[in-house]
Length: 499
Image (tube, rainbow, N blue to C red):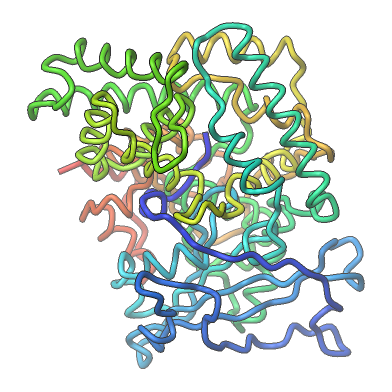
C-alpha cells in the first residue's frame, strides 16, 4: 500500500516534471551557494492562479545535487524547492523542512496546498519542502505513458485465484520494463540514503546550522535515515505516522492489510451507526460492497468514457480510509457505485494514483516503487510472494495482495539495505508520533522506530486515520507545536485521546 499524506490524497494534483543534468552548482571551493528564490511558475491552483499571484510569500527554487554521490564531480539533478515564508519574521526560528510521505509524493505541491494546516508553525518558521530525487520536477521517474498507467492501476485484484495473481505479476513485469526503458539512467540513484544526503545539502544551502524537520509517513524513514547519517546536524525533528524500515516486504504487506481491513470495519460500524446509505447492519453493508466489487470484475462502470474496474474501486475505498474526514464522502461513493454511478469512486481512485482530469499522471505511481525497490536488497521469489498473497488475502480479499515485493521482484536495478538500518545515537531528541487507528502505518511500527533510533520519544494518538497532526486533534497539535516552537518534549508515555 502506498503511503500518502491524507490531505494530499484528497486533491487531484496537476503538475509537471522536469528532469535534467548539469554540472555541480558549487563554487570553486565546493561550497553550496545560497538558494535563489523566485516565483513558482509551474504550479497551478484552482482558477489558474499561481502561488505567487495569490500569496507573495510562496516562492520556489532549484537546488543542484549530485546524481551519484560517489561521483560528486559528475552530473547533477535539479531538486525543486518551495518556501512559504514565516509570518512572524521578527520572531523567526529558521526553516522547517517537510516531507509529506510517499515515497514519491511531491513536497512542492503538497506544501503549496496544505500550508494553512501549519499556520501555527509558520508564525515562527519558513516552511520548506521539495520534490525528492525521482519525484515530479526533480528528475521524476516515468514508467510508460499515461495510457500505460491507466491500464496498470485498473488491474483487478479479484477474484482471489491463480489467474488473478498471474495477471498481476504480468502487469508488474511489464511495468518494471517500462521503468527501465523510460528512467533507467536515474533508477539506481533515487533511494532514501541519497535523498537524506540531499536534505543535508538543502540545510547547507538554507544556511541552517541544524535541520529542523517534520516527516510524515515515508517522511519518517527519510528523517530517520538523515538522523543516522548526520546525527550532529539534527535540530528539532518530528516523525508522524512512522514506518519501521527494518521489516520485510512481506511483513509490511501483512501489517498494512490488517490495518486497512480494521479501518474498513471501523468505517462500516460508524456508517451503520449514523444510518448507512448502503446497509442497515454491518453485515449487510459489507455484503453489498462485496457484491459491488465482484460485479465490477466482469461489468465495470463507465465513467466519462473510462471504465471503473474492481481494481480502481478498491483503490478508491482505500484512499478514503486514510482520513476519517473522508468517510462521509466514501459512504456516498459506495452507495452511488451500488446504484450504477461510479464517478465518486473514480475520483477517489484518481486522487490516490495522481491522475488529473486531463488524464495525466503525476510521478507518484512510478516514484513509489522506484524508491521502495532501491531501498531494499530483498527480491522475493515466487514461493515467498505466494505466501504473502495467501496470508494477506485471507485477512482481507479487498486489500490483500503481494505488496511491494511483487513489483520489486522484477525491478531492473538492484537495491541495498542501508536505508533499513537506523540509529540516531548522538542526535538531539526526536519525537515519534504513532496513531492507534492508522491503517497505512500501523501503530506497532511507532515503538519499534522509537527503539531503533535510540534518541527518540514516543507519543501516542488514540484516534483514526493516517497521520496524527493533520487529523485536527488539538492535543497532538499542541504537543508537537510546543516541541517545534519551544523545544519542550512531550512527557514520556504521552497519550492523546481521539476527543
